[in-house]
Image (cartoon, rainbow, N blue to C red; front, side):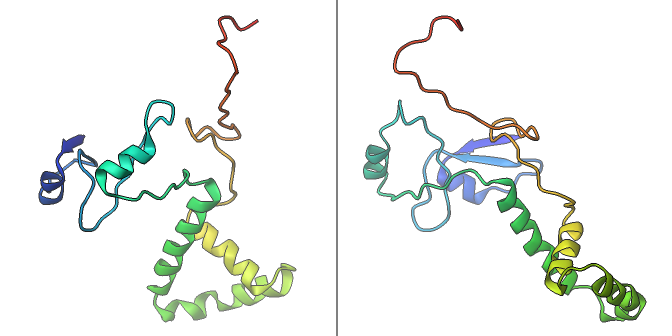
Length: 148
């Protein structure tokens, strides 16, 4: 479910099952706003000037960016695990370090990846999220009326 609201309503409401709030006005004092726009139809500098807000352009996150964020969360989860589990896994950890041919940091990186649900990082389309696909923007100097 989506709620479209003014800044005041969006900050003051807590409605179950609403996962996306679209604010009609950017936050004035603090907070973050995401603006989606078509550069061919929108005058970005005019929007900044009229809103009194300076926007920072941030591209969509790439798969590696998402994995890095998941790694940070995995570190927090691992830090919450009791030290009482160490003896049960210590021999396996030492065996891994002695036989893998990787450094301790590389092995720990792989363990964090697994804890975060990753076994590999695949490229995905920014538009459809389909694996091993890319998003391409084709701009032609003149109108294209037929595919031939």
